[in-house]
Image (cartoon, rainbow, N blue to C red; front, side, top):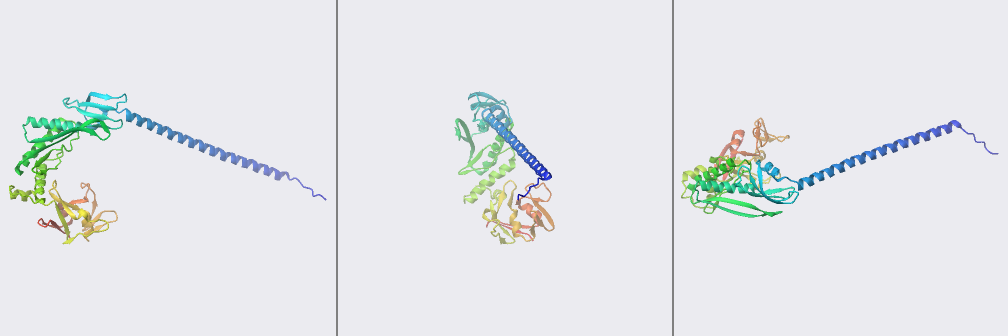
Amino acid sequence: MKRKIEFNEDFANQIYKNKLKNNKNSKNIANFIWKLLKLFCLVLSILIIVKIAQGIWMFNRMYNVDVLSEMKYKYNEEFIIISKNVIDTGTGTYILSPKSNEDITFNASNKGITIKDDYRETAIKYYTEKYVKENNILNMKFTEKKQPDGSFENCDFLYYDFWFEISSYDQIEDTVKIVYNIEKYITQNTKSDFMFNIGGKIKLSNYESFVQYSKFSTLDSLIYQEKYYYLNYLKENNLDTFDIDNNEIQMIWKPEKLKILINNNELENTENRPLLDNSIATYNTELKDYELSIAHLIENIDSIKKLENGNIKYNGKEYNINEDTTISNSLPSQCSITMIEKTFNSTIKYDYENRKIYIFIE
């Protein structure tokens, strides 16, 4: 006998409703994924457009550099074009002149994204030789050459060097004044803020100075530095100083480097700070004082405590290691002996003969 199957209408309706609900959920998920995909494509399109715009800007920047604008930005001066050999994009070689003095002409090469020129060297040559001629100075020597530089093979740039030959120590001061005045003369006649070192030197026998003459240098400081380095050259090479007054030597010269001893102990090599040249105090000719790394004090004096915040503490007072010493309670990483004496109540003893400096701190 066959079993009769009864049809449950409510159950069928429920199945139908669940199917409709599932279809609706699937459709919602599909719509969400589609919207997400469209958003992704929109963002990707924007990024591609931005990159294309950047590429166009870089291309224009590379091949449409305005030489006069770039030179004005670089030197803070107005320039004029005397002649040029360029293509439509402006790349090529130029002969330029500052509006303030059209007697000065110099070369510039535009490679697109970069411009190289020899205005600095040309201005130094022009004003140096003009000053020397006007003041009837006879002991100046110079070398000059023109040659390409690196990728700028299509243009010859000026390289200029000048010096003054003297025959005795007594001539150093007057010669320093000449070089100093030349630097001032150049600065006064150019609007450019580029004369950080005009390159003038003093030569005495086999000695050649390396002091930098800039608009920030004082005359007294330059005289002292030139005398000091010449005396140091003689001392380090065991050369005669018989023609130099002994009082002058004692007043100016000190050993350039001194070995540091703290509380009679030599510095120890540590994992964090190998000694190398850091175990010495170096003479600073501008300060007229020795300098040393404050790290040596921190690592060798128990009473100087290093704090977790990077500061140090001594005698109940906290100090910040900062190159900007205008900030209250700050110490530079390279401290002068004068600052060490004042800050740490230390006693300093110098042994110039054995090239040592003794620092005593409780």
